[in-house]
Length: 198
Image (cartoon, rainbow, N blue to C red):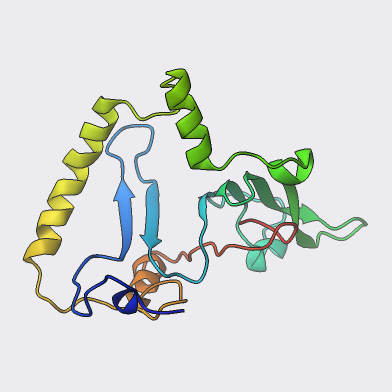
């Protein structure tokens, strides 16, 4: 896979941002203390869009001794490709013991209905023809997102030229790993259908 700067029509000295990883917090009562980790980039190892809801461990667990090595429970909403939902959770192994094993429940929309669903842009173009704005972002939402993003762009513009780079075909720079690991977390990696979340 060619690096971004070696693509046709891209300057070898391009300073266009190709990757972003952020920790975001929402300052309201409902989301207090809940971190949101976002990342996106070009020329990554996989092309996908998904949301992973990693559930917090709860106190007073019934199997606390057995849960020491348990994976966190995760709800994954796959946006593309293979739209669907995967729930990964810890289940008690059948029998008298209290051993826990990871289990998954999965719904894959294109797998279930076995049809050639329209791609995202096909659907949007169809909605434009119909004059239906249901799937489009409202202007107040776009404006609010720019109010959030513009200060970040200003900071990035005024930074020195040195920035973390990454190899094409990877999942981004090492700094993105440090960002999430400083809180004792890790990125949920994409997986093939039927093999768990992602």
